[in-house]
Image 1 (cartoon, rainbow, N blue to C red):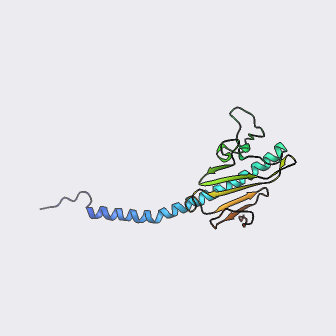
Image 2 (image 1 turned 180 degrees about the vertical axis):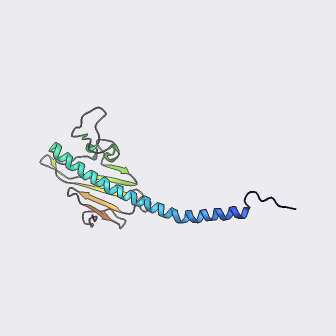
Image 3 (image 1 turned 135 degrees about the vertical axis):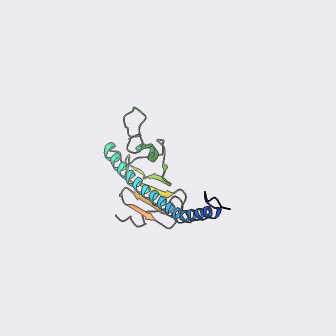
Length: 168
């Protein structure tokens, strides 16, 4: 009596599945760390964009910095840029409305705080970038102001002007 040897045995299939699970167990944590690193790089890039947009706004409209984050956003379709819709950043970073003071992008929540109005101008501002879910979407918090220096805090608290600047 001769056995037909077509196909795989149950043991062979179980071994293949076990190998695939071992490879997945090794790869998934690295994938999550890569996503956190990408979100953090995006947050720093977004803060640089905010700083550039604020400086451009201040030099274009000669009225200091913006009163709300939404002022940096795009104007209505077909309209020219104005001081309340300058078109310097996209709709996502501007928070989507002219009164927005914050936005969410790539696992980070951005908050804007203009300085006081002095002589009809706003001469200071602050931005914070904090992970939406600390440890999952990011681990660091970031801060920047009109100086353009981006600062980082890894201690599970919001970053501030007292934290150390990013290198490079």
